[in-house]
Image (tube, rainbow, N blue to C red; front, side, top):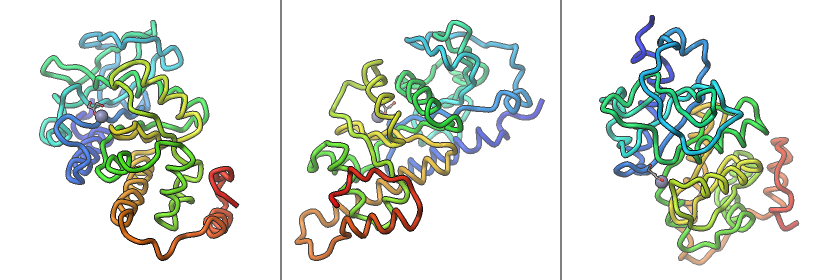
Length: 271
Ligand code: 2HA
Ligand code: ZN
């Protein structure tokens, strides 16, 4: 067996959480990540017949039976993942009943997966139904995006349009736009269901006055997507209180989207 601490997916979780912590997005226990793993690859590092313990997941994730995820731990700090991955991360497999997680590695202090696991798994199911290559779901509290939630209407089209206006390439990076949910109680199946519903159309879903969810094929792609949303929100927050002299017009956004050949939400522009 190879050393699990040297597995590329463990190292990627360490690097990503450290990076997000240093960007100031994931204070204290804020944020969580789940990454769908390749079973064969995990088998090079762990004995897949050895289940350490089982943990109920709180709903039935039928379409994920047998799938293996690496997930950040409940109450754990992104700040600490790099120094102590075995306590702060866990590798789980969704059991035959679809409602039990089989712990294969990690959560060594007796802990468990993030309280947001329902929203993560429901988002994975929604994204996999439209993109079979989706592997990543990330939840984080990016500062400017969160600030923008307090001063901007929480509406899919209006929020997307404002972000698209803030950086030329936004419409090429998230041409499908972003989904926006109102404030909801976190950690529940209801917020998971609402997130998953939006995830059928969008890879980024804002949780009003809380943070956002991002999804994608790889950690880089998903992180880059969130980073781009946050950059646009930062430009908005730096300029929202100043007189606007220039703007990127809707016809220019259209020109860019068509030049890049992306399938953009035409109904989110006013042409
Ligand atoms: O797990 O960010 O939404 C910490 C959170 C909950
Ligand atoms: Zn959160």
